[in-house]
Amino acid sequence: MAITDDVMRKKKLDKIADRLHNVSEITKIMNEILTDYVEQVSTMEEKHIKYDRSNWMRVHGSTDDYKRYDGYEADLHTITILIEQIRRYGKIIYDDKPNNVKLD
Image 1 (cartoon, rainbow, N blue to C red):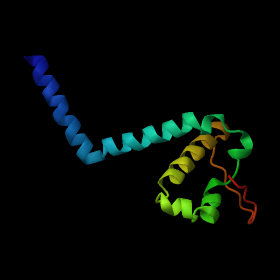
Image 2 (cartoon, one colour; image 1 turned 90 degrees about the horizontal axis):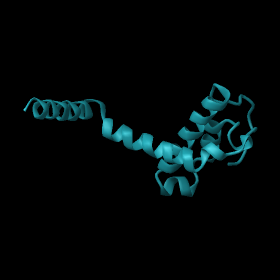
Image 3 (cartoon, one colour; image 1 turned 120 degrees about the vertical axis):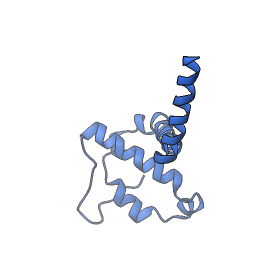
Image 4 (spheres, rainbow, N blue to C red; image 1 turned 60 degrees about the horizontal axis):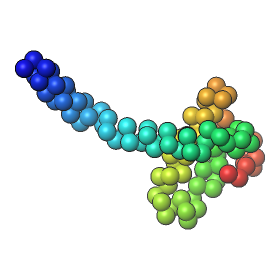
């Protein structure tokens, strides 16, 4: 019976943690980022990773495709690219030079 009580207590604590910290939602987003990483970003060439993605999104992120999907997929892809920049280069790439934007 002690095992059953422990299991029930853990389930109750998990529900509380999920309500307080949005664990289910964060887990879903992190899984989507991981999927994008495995399916796309991990095999991308440097020329598609080493650029200012934030600036690219600011300049090109208001396209009809972005609006049609409420930006969700593009934003997840951006987060994945930023994570890969940190992994490859130890930082997020920012380009202070205006008009130096690469197309994705």
